[in-house]
Amino acid sequence: MNKNVNIKSLIIDKPLKLDCGQTINNFPLAYETYGALNKNKDNAILIFHALTGDQFVSGINPITKKDGWWSYAVGSGKAIDTNKYFVLCANVIGGCMGSFGPSNINSETNKVYGTNFPVITINDIVNAQYNLLDFFKIDKLFAVMGGSMGGMQVLQFVSNFPNKVKVAIPIACTSSHSAQNIAFNELGRQSIMADANWTGGDYSNQNKNPDKGLSVARMAAHITYLSKIGLQEKFGRKLQERDDLKFSFDADFQIESYLRHQGSVFVDRFDANSYLYITRAMDYFDLIKEYGGNLSKAFAKTKTKFLIISFTSDWLYPTSENKEIVIALNAIGADVGFVEIESDKGHDSFLLNIPDFLDTLKDYINTSYLKN
Amino acid sequence: MKQEFQIIANLIEKNTKILDVGCGDGTLMEFLKNNKKTNIRGIELSKNKVQKCIGKGLTVIEGDAEKDLGQFPDESFDFVILSQTLQAFLNPEKVISELLRVGKKAIVTIPNFGYWKVRLHLLTKGTMPITRTLPDEWYNTPNLHMCTIKDFFNFCKDRKINLYKSIALQNLRSSKITNTNIELKNLTAVLGIFLLEK
Image (cartoon, rainbow over all chains, first blue to last red):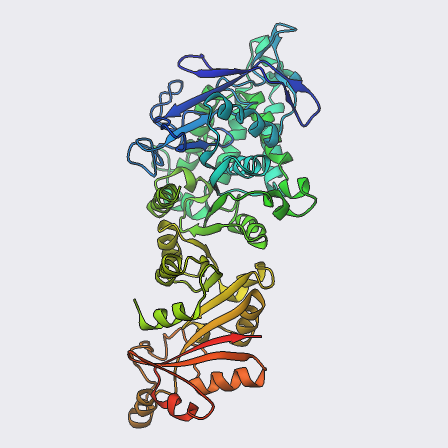
C-alpha cells in the first residue's frame, strides 16, 4: 500500500496501553509538518485527520500525487497560515500511511498483522499522537482542530490533556457515534468482508486484495458525505457519455460513473483492514459514556477555548449533534463559540472551498493567537 | 458608539460575567470587553453576524434565545443584556423569566411605542408607525409584541420584578423614569432602558 517514500516517522518507545488491554511499544507514528516552530514554541497547531485522511494535510501528497486533503484551509496565506503557524499532523494508528497499522509486518510472525492487529479506539489514537509534543518539546499547543473523525480526536485530546491546548476547533463531528453512523460503517465493513479476496483479513500474506469490497464500502460512504441537493445539482439525471439509456447495468448515469470512480481510486491508496479498524474506532467513540453520561465532565478540568462548527446540509454529523457539545460546554461556563455554516455540500463541506467557513476559521485563529 | 450602549455600559460593573442576548455584530460586546474588562459571551440568531463576532475573537454561539437559553445554568452570569429585541420574541414573558434565571441581573432595552411621534403617526396618518427605531412595514416587521415604556413598567410591577434603574432615552438625552413622571416619559422617550432583578 504505502511505498514509504518521503514519510517522516517517529518510533514510539514509550509503551502505550490500549483500551482493548494490549500494550504496544516501539511502534511507528508517521507525521508531517508545515511551517516552522517559533522560539517560544507557542505557534503549534495539531491537526487530526478523518477516516480516510492522512498526515499530508497540504501541498502535494507524495504518495497519491494529489493535493493534500485540507489544502483549501492549510498553507501559505490560508486560513491556517503556514507562514505563521507550525502545523503538525500524524497518520492515526490503525492507518495505512506509515503509522502502526494492520498492514505492518508482525515481527514475531514475519507476516502482515491483518486482523491480528489489536482493535484500537479514538482514545488510543490521540494518546499515540501525544508523543509528538514530547518529540518537538512543545509544552502547550496553540490549537488542535479537525473535522469528522478529526473532530472526535479534538474532543478526546482536550479531555485527556486538559492543560495542553489553548484553542480547540472540532468541526462537523459528534461526542458519541450515532446508531445511523455505526450502521453505515458496518455496511462498509460487511462489504469488505464479503469480498472473497479479503480472506479473513489475511489477503496481504496471500497476495490478494479485496478491491471490490473496499470500493463498494467507499461508494456507500461517499454518498453519506454529500447531500441530496448537492447530488441533484451536480449530477441530476445526467447520462454518462451517451445519448440515451442503454437498458443494461452499465453506468448509464453520471452519478454511477462518479461513484465507481471514487471507489476505484480509493483502493489504490487505502488498506481494507485499516478501513475496518478505523471505522471500528469511530463506532466505539462515546465520550458521553466515558464520563458517566455527563459530557460536561469531559471538559471540567480544561480552560481551553472552543469553537464548534457545523454545516447546514451535513446529515451525517448534523448540527444537533455538534450543538450537544456546545450545550455541555456552556453548562460548565466554558469559553465556547458556535456557528453553523450555510452549505449544500453535505458533510464534505469541511474539506471544501467554502468562504464563510474558511474566513471564519482564519479570523478566529488569528485573533485567538494575538491574545496569547 | 450608540448612546444606548453607553448607558448600558454605565450600568455594568467591571470584571463581571456577561451574556449579550442578540449580540448582533458584537459592537457592544467589544466595547464592554475593552472598557469594563468583562468576561462576555454572546448569542445571536443571524449566521452572518455570528461569523463576524467569531472573526473578531468574541465568544458567540449561534442560537435562538427563545430556545437556547436553557443550556445555561441558573445565575451563570452577573448581567444578561437584551437590547431592543424583546418585542421580536414569540413569548417575551418567557424570555424575561429566562433572562432572570440565567443572570443575577438583566438589562432590557425597548423601543417605546408610546413615543409621541409614533402616536402622532397612527393618529394622523392612520397607518402603522414607521420611525428610526421602528423602520419596518407592518407586513415585514420582526416586531411581534410592541410595547410602551409604561407597558413594560407595569409588566415588571405586576410580576414583582425589581426595577433597579429605569432610564428614558430621547435622542442624546437620558433621564430617570419614576412613578411620578412615567406618563411624560412614555410620551417623550424613544427608548427605555431597564435594569431588573427577580
